[in-house]
Amino acid sequence: MTVSAISHYRGGAIDEVAPLAKTLRAIYLKYGVGYRLSRFQTGPNEGDWLVTVTYADATAYENAQVLFAQDPDLQRVFMAIAKFAKRISREMVIDLDF
Image (cartoon, rainbow, N blue to C red; front, side, top):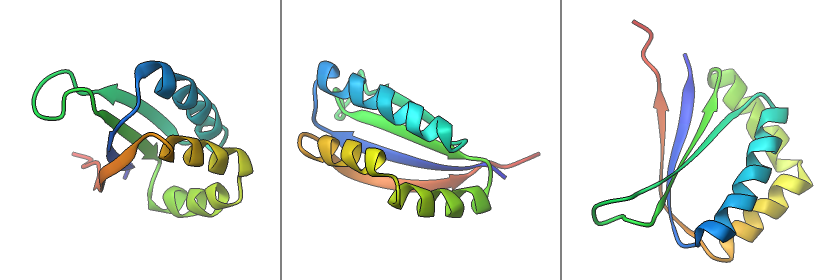
């Protein structure tokens, strides 16, 4: 079953976020991991970011975590994001196959 990490971030303008998101997507794809960035357009979270990172299954998630920790380019992107954005929440979800 597909596993996704869904994170809510606050902070950062589109011109700050978009180049880093593009780099993240490329790094994640190299590991077979999906990446999607969305922006809240309405409501109390307007202007915030929703990030969905998708893994084929729980084993792929666990393996990716080890690889991510060892990837200096990925760590640099995480540090750059942390300079202007704060993670508000992170939830793990499992797709139901029915």
